[in-house]
Amino acid sequence: MVAAFSCFALAESITGVVTNKTTNRPAAGDDVVLIRLQQGMQEASRTKTDSHGRFTLDVPDQGIHLVRVTHDKANYFRPAPPGTQSVEIDVYNAAAKVKGVAGEADVMRIQTDASGKVLHVVENFFVKNESNPPLTQFSDRPFEFYLPAGAVVEGSAALAPGGMPVQASPVPLGDANHYAFIFPIRPGETRFQITYRLPYSGSLKFSPRVGMPTDTIAIMMPKSMTFTGGASTPYSAVTEETTAQTYVARSVAPSEPLDFTVSGIGQMPRDTEAAATAGADASGATGGTAAGTAATDTRPGGGLGVPLDPEGTNDPWAKYKWWILGGLGLAMAAGAGFMLTGNQKAGIAPAGGVAAAGGFAGGPVSLLAAMKEELFELETDRLQGRLTESEYVEQKAALEVVLRRALLRGGRGESSAEASNVAGPFV
Image 1 (tube, rainbow, N blue to C red):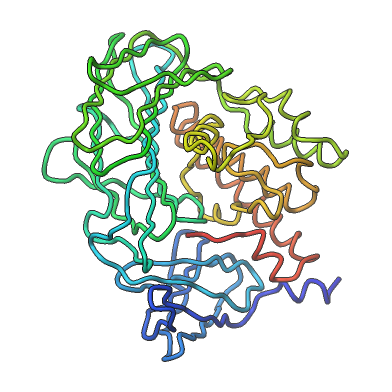
Image 2 (tube, rainbow, N blue to C red):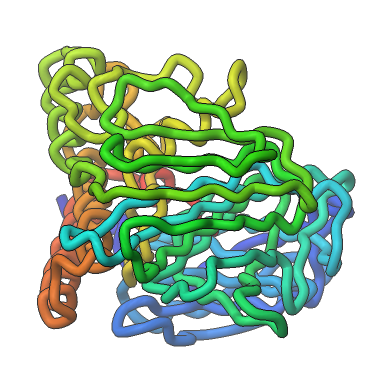
């Protein structure tokens, strides 16, 4: 037991290599910082990469850390759970405007509150960066967007390719209702989420604006509400066996009219992501299948089984459909939230998705999956006003304590490499 634990115990230092993937050469002279996540993000130690892109960081305390590398003013991260001895980090050269950056989707999830006097919107932007050679788009306004007049922002987050959601606040620009996320658009897919509310008197007209060519615009709302597209807008209904209705416009140009009006009242069914995850876990333990789990899944879009095309290989809308049907998709990252990322190789379903066939194998990985869903649910309850601020703080602190204990307990039976795989990439 002691020997098993020692491989997961605190490393006195972390070594690593930083590679510039734009040039496929070592990244020399980059700032490297070890960030301590407990009690806020605090700098623990720092250094610079040498001519071979190598670095060594002192680890002065136990706990959960991030390694941050700054290259061309953009930051890149890797998690460093207890026992981490080495990391490899890829970076890219940055430019204010990068050819190959375009919109994949703008997905709006709309519902009223119980009184019918407030409209709640969760809007998700998917941005793809297919630059060649690969570059990061970063400036004082790397991603711009518009909100409806009168929108009051309640929460926002950003998700880098292969990462975990992190808090990212929108910055107002010069003209009305115009904002930017100051967050690097790295090669791959970056996602942004913003949650806001609007005053509502039974009917409201939206006039969306896209700042770049966008493959898909989608509006999702309860079936008890009514959607009316503008006279020249390109929306079409997407028929799904769910408790929601969806309208989609494809291949949208920035100048294209996208007006629509919503009326009536209604709420989306409360997500039961944690229950669905638990069902998948039990199914895996008994040799069941995800199809059996889906039969008892009551989430919006649940009960449909595992999507046959979850990445949208055959149908581009499928990717966003399954991502948004499962719930809010992105949640605000809690202090140690990056530890809950997991990946499909470890048997953890994506946020909003359904577990892969066979479910989870049980043990620390399934516990982390359940903890992830609890954090997502906690943030959802906070944004929708189901928790007071004091209740939120208390429950979040309790979850983080359990999380740290689970990580340490799980690590006693794993190598540091296996533990890093469970943690997954942060951003």
